[in-house]
Each structure stands twice: as C-alpha cells, then as structure tokens.
Image (cartoon, rainbow, N blue to C red; front, side, top):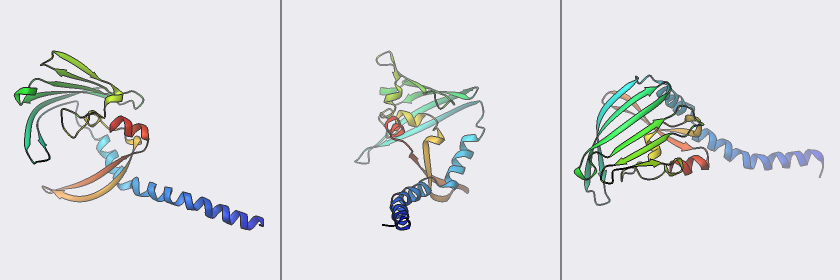
Length: 183
C-alpha cells in the first residue's frame, strides 16, 4: 500500500471514531444552554434568603404526601450556608438539614441532617450524596449548587410561564465520578 493510500485509510479510520464523539459533544453541550446556566450561576441572589416551601411526594398509585419546609440562606463570602426546617407532617417535624455550599470546586460541600426523634445529627458523607433526600426523588447533591464545568447542558424546550420566558435545560454529567457522587 502506498503512503497516500495509508494516510487516507488512517484518516477515514480516525474520522469513524471521532465524528460520533464530536457530534455527541455538540449535541450535549449546547452553547445557548451553557450561556443560560452561566447567567443563572452569576446572578446576584442577595446575601440572605428566607422562604417557605411545600414539597409534594406522589407515590406510584398517585397518593400525595405534603411536607412544609422553612428555609434560610446566608452568604459567607463566596460560600453559602443553607438551613431547612421541616414543619409538617408531625412524623418529620423539626427535622433539619444544613448545607455548607463551598464555591471552591476542589472542596466538597458539607451537609448534616438532624433527626429529632433520635436526637442525633448525621453528617452526609461526600460519597453518600446520591442517596434519597427525605424520601423524595431528590438526592443530597440536589441540595447544593452545581459546579458548571462538571456538566454539559442541552436546551430541551423554550416556553412561557406566567408571561416569563423559561427554558428546560438538561444537565449531563461529564465524568463517571460526577455520576457516582450525584446519582
């Protein structure tokens, strides 16, 4: 086989493997979706926040369970401390969840769960953040901010909600390590 033919065969072979990877990257990391996520991440959300929330858990039969939660958030420099108090129902009343969300991506966020029935505080290990949060479909990693470089983003849908432009964005973990840590 002459040199030119060898180069053509080698180039074709490389393209056969590279094209699917390039198209996956272009589909997975949509620049418009990443731009939206970067703007959300950079927004000023104030130094302090309080909110009252209602969590609705729906089982396979459609039965609903309601949980009321009070949340408090305080910025400490670039880091954020969040505290959640479960107020209802009675069986989880006064259960509390504290998250220290560090801006430094090399530092694992700290999380603790206080269980009043046991009078115990449980530290959530960084290796255990894929576990279910309070019996919901959310996990402990959902209770912290995402490190944007760990994800690709895909704009799934644009819509209007109560007159405001809204986007549905899929986040796709870039590494198996992130998948393990976040579920």
